[in-house]
Amino acid sequence: MVLPLACFRGGSDEVGSLDTSTTADTSTTDEPCDVGTLDCECTSGDGCNAGLVCNGGICEEIVAVCGNSEIETGELCDDGNSDNTDSCTTLCMPPSCDDGIVSGDEIAVDCGIAACNMGCDFGEACTIANDCLFPVCGPGGRNDTNICQLPISCQDWRAFNPAAGDGVIAIDPDGAAGPIPEMDVFCHMSKSGGGWTLVFTASDDGENTWTWNNRAKLAGEPDTVGSLDMTHLDFMSPAYHALPATDLLFVHQPSDVWAHYANVGVGAQTLGDIIVAAGSPVCDYSLAGNGHELAAGTLTESGQLCDTDLYFNLGDHEMDLVSCMDFGSGSNTASFGPVWSADKGAGCPFDDPAEFGLGPHGPCGVCPMQFPSTEFNYLGFANALNLNTGAQGAGENYMQIYVR
Image (tube, rainbow, N blue to C red; front, side, top):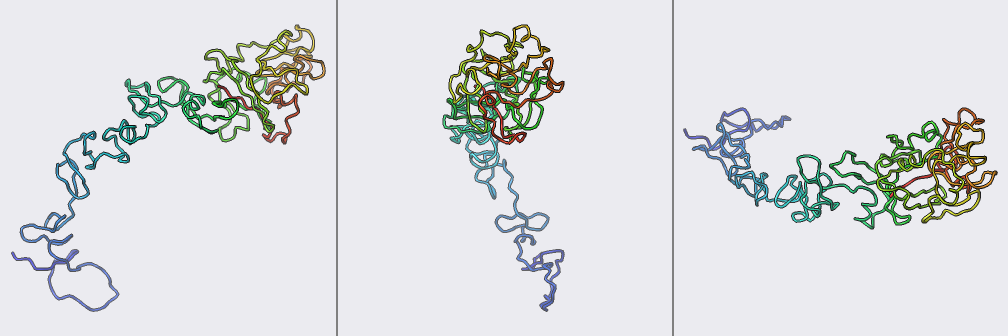
């Protein structure tokens, strides 16, 4: 059969005179087209123009099939195999660092120093440390596969990146294979060498968070408080329970007076472990001036402050040691957690320590019954030095604790 030299796009295959009248109908149905072109009849012998294939008598675009060993439209190569480490991938393209697959010399998807000059992110597969953005490659805890690890602390991150500034990063305190989950933490990188991880904030924010009745939280009872978006309010990071607290940094705001204490914790002791190990109440006159010595900072012995040492869980030494050991004693305004020695009027040392701690106030025999459930916003040494100059109850006065 001899085909006509023209056919029509659409549902009609009739040949006849064209209606050339000008009407408002702009439909493209039955537009004429050349035989062998897209969407038109195939030429005799089932032929179509280049790039088209005859299907059911109509010329259609060729749909490239990657893996058939033929280089077709849109393909740069086709070696007919599923090996992405050779010169042609299963995308029928050469390996590249933005193809979304592990190709060529890549260690993981679109990363690896040799292939892409870029280390792989946390959780990606690795063989050596230099495969990773943060250069630690270790067990991933599944299938014995090594993966890129997160830093274990802000100090770890600082050692790798000395120019790092303050901010939030992800850490994994015991590595990907350990039971402690990864967590986001805030790092302070300027004071006393940097590398500090924020674990705690006591804030004058109108909330009764750090109370005597809640002192188990300070002692390491698993809990988190607040958020990294509002660390000027009462805050407890999961890092409080996970990171060793060898060194402690206390920073008061709005004064920015700070105090660094070195070698407070031993080994893997967390801040909660340190508080528990101190015992409660601590009653020992000979401890005065023999607490944890100030290593660096802007804190000075002035005002009501007896010394700049750091103490924990002090009982009130205003009278004898018997009353100091008795939480129900009328004169025992005991503290719990970090505290400083000050003179509230009865003389140094350790007078009314609850007024120089970070919230908890012991019950004491003559104190109002609500004291154990009330957070006292004295904020440690800030009360002794009259540093709480912000608006009360608004979260403008606060003390933060960092560990390293």
